[in-house]
Amino acid sequence: MRILHFADAHIDMVTQGRIDPETGLPVRVIDFLTSLDQIVDRAIEEAVDLVVFAGDAYKDRNPQPTYQREWGKRIMRLSQAGIPTVLLVGNHDVARASNRAHTLHEFRTLAVPYVHVGDRIELLGPKELGIPVQVLTLPWVSRSTLMTRQDTAGLTVQQVLEKIENLITSAVQNLLAQADPDLPLILTAHASVQGAKYGSERTVMLGHEVVFSHSLMRNKRIDYVALGHIHKHQDLNPDSHPPVIYPGSIERIDFGEAREQKGYVLADVKRGETTWEFVPLKTRRFIDLAIDTPSADSFMADIMDQLPDANKVAGAVCRLRLSYPRDWEPLLDENGIAEQLKEALSFQILKDRSTAKRSRLGDTTAVDQLTPLDLLETYWRTVDLEAEEMGAMQELAKEILGKTA
Ligand SMILES: [Mn+2]
Image 1 (cartoon, rainbow, N blue to C red):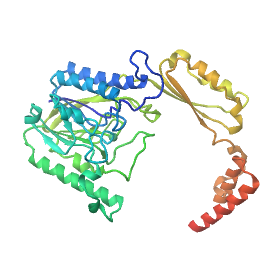
Image 2 (cartoon, protein in one colour):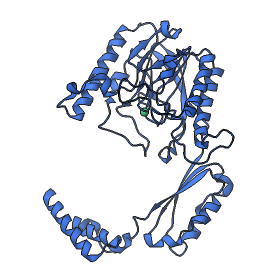
Image 3 (tube, rainbow, N blue to C red):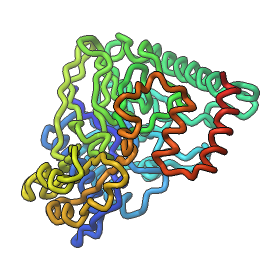
Image 4 (cartoon, protein in one colour):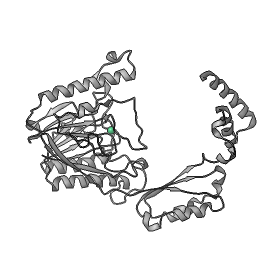
């Protein structure tokens, strides 16, 4: 059973920046669609038995019709090729109120051939999929579909999350018990799983979403776990059965993902024995440069020296990270940098001026010997606070520090 697994398409996540004159679409949206094209092309070329998309098609639950058209075109290519395709609903696809439609609803409403929408916890088998495999779908489940206000009355957020996890875990275990033991079984889930690593800049709502335990996924009854939600590719059960895989997002959302190789997974799923490979996607280049500027005298020269050659940045999304004292600001010639990077798709300068007056602490001062109040006073000086205001702030700080001590 050859399957292709991808997730977190988020095709309209990055809409700012240049517009492609031919299509009228943002260039960065085209990047995401190009990744999607590579995935669909490969599924069709390889004639895979099944495609599993593990959730988050769009940025949010209100995608523009233009983006729906582009997503729809590509899913229809899979349908027309006769490839069974499971579209799992992720948190970005789903509305909070349970009676509202999610972004993948039309595929269900219009009963698109070969396309199966995973918007509930259920077990799809040969009868539904037309192939000898079982897929257990675990979409993003919003609290309101599982419990009423009364159920959660008086409970802490943590207790509510625990209750949700227990309800979902037992629903999944019931379905596993019903599954045909001779057929391979794929669990696809859009969720956080304990132990997963997040990309550096992704905002993790830890404590606000269910984090599933390993034991639910590392179940020998399952032959492949197709996850979505976390944008960094990883296997949470290496060298053991079943593979528990996040393929990661299909393009880079932001600089937090700059160093991540994006891709999808091709797997040969067999009962008790699965092999898989991560297939890299050709994606937009990201260049993230930390520039060293030790001296005011050579500030711009140092920056220009460290910029890549104009031809090396062609088409790339660039970021320069500069760290310098606030009073060097007039020395910065952004136009000069823009000229050097004009072949880039875009560039941004991230200025860290907070290191500004570190030197004012004096070389002899041992910071660890300063009290919090001393440190705060030093800080007020670096931001040039008026003496009178500084006095008032110190008084307030004393009050607060006194209370917490
Ligand atoms: Mn998600």
